[in-house]
Image (cartoon, rainbow, N blue to C red; front, side, top):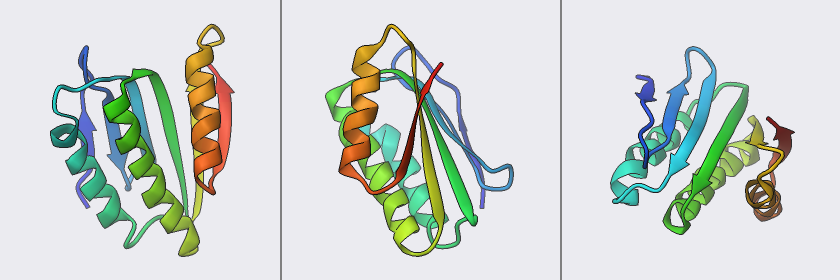
Length: 124
């Protein structure tokens, strides 16, 4: 399975999805002009990964900001991970936030209440 490595921009987050290296990471800002065009390959990769995942998947979220359109796609990612867990994989989300960023902390709390996954809120 080919890895995805996307360099972040002012509008799009950095993305690393690498099964061989056990790295699953989303970081930076997420406000792409065409949210579907940006996230569709990520969703497709995760759906393919979910067919034969590692025993344990730890997904790192280090977002500084995301817009409303991105929030839905982030939830879609979590739903795929939740389904993987329901099928027997161990899944964990590490949601990183800055101490001054109550909005990102609150977003992590809200997502943790929407899905049945182990969510770690981590002060960066």
